[in-house]
Length: 94
Image (tube, rainbow, N blue to C red; front, side, top):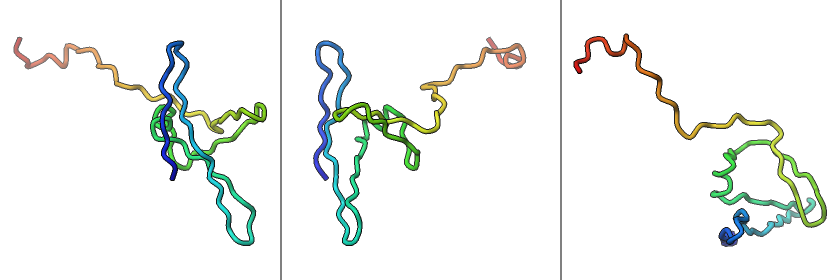
């Protein structure tokens, strides 16, 4: 598997890119299949999980757009603490 290197964010604040190679799988008696792997840092940032269904949109010969077929709810980074109630304070010394 080729080494994947992350391109750092430039001074203009452009998002980082993840260069990779498209792999061609050739099997006797079958058409060539092409695979694109998503680097782990990018998959983690997107919240991608194995088995998800996605689709490619062809914008032009040089640009593809990856689209999730089913929208996923956003996951909170942390949960909010519930406010203390009078019932929680019963029996606690101050």
